[in-house]
Every structure is written in C-alpha cells, then in structure tokens.
Length: 222
Image 1 (cartoon, rainbow, N blue to C red):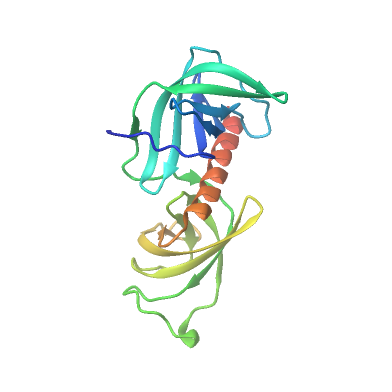
Image 2 (spheres, rainbow, N blue to C red):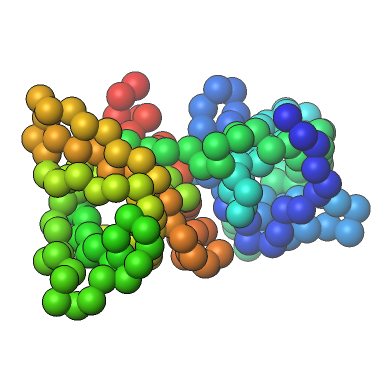
C-alpha cells in the first residue's frame, strides 16, 4: 500500500466499517484542524449505527485511481437541529488499497448494448451496426461492466451501455477488455468492459449505488 496525503473532499461518500459491519456516510464538513464531520453511518433502509467517542473506524472512498482507505478516531458527537453527526480525526494516512481500482459487485440488471466499432476501434457505419442487444449485467463496478452475451465480442470493440442505476438512466461508452467462453451456459459468453470516458459526477452516482447494493446483498445473506 502507498500512503498518500489527505484528499477527502466535502460531500465525499464514505464506506464505513465499524465493529466488523459496513455502513455508508457522507463528509458534511472539513474543519480547519483537519477533522471531518460525517453523517451518522447508515445501512440501506436502516437506522444509523451509534459510534462511541474514542472508537477507531475504517473509512474508504473511490476516486479516479481506485479505492482509498484510512483509519479515523471518533472525536465527539454533534447534534444540530436534532440531527446526529460525528467529528472524526485521521488516525492514519490514506492508502490506495486496491490495485485493480474498483470493487465489482455481482448484480443482474437489464442492460442494452449497442456495438459502435470493430475490434480495431474503427467506427462501424450505421448500416453495419448490429441491432441493440438486450441482456443483463453479470457484475458492475465504478470502472466497468461485465455482461452476458450469446455472441462473442473481441477485445478492443467499443460499445454503448445503457441501463437504469438507482432509478436514473445511465449511458456510457466502454471498451471490451476480455471475454470468457462457457459453452454450458446460456448465454455462453461473459463480456468484460471498461468505461472509456465516464465523468466524475456519473462515477460517483454509480459508486454510491454500488455501495448501497453491496450492503443490501450482504444483509440479505447474513
């Protein structure tokens, strides 16, 4: 792990691990002394979890280069207009904790795929474009999507991915990075892609959705 300076920003969505359980919270304020004011950590559709002053929690967030993690010590509880917040102080430097970049979450949601280029990246003329392919995701991350396909797709092929994320339309171009063939499955191909030009706001929406889905899935299996 490589230590990096403090670069958490206001409004950052944080994944919070307290006593072995994962929650989510937001950065509400950054104090001049470096302390973070965070919202009370919550699970999906559940009440907030109480944090104790002096408790050390693990916090992580996602940025362009991957997932970043740090420890923080709970400094105090703060009540404003009847809402509970926590002041936390950094207990470690931030470290880049995943070389691959983003955690992939196994999700099956409807996905529309339009092929835009051949495997060399050459744009297809409209008359040569195959029809939109309706399929489902296999897994999804802040960096790309894997989906099921009845036909092979060569690495380098660019596609347009359209789906609904958290009730909102999500539309991004991606490039096929690799493909696996499992003849016993239908569809038999797993196509893995990487988003090519996703913007920061769109990526944050996606990662927030994935954090919430990861917590929901984890609670369902407990």
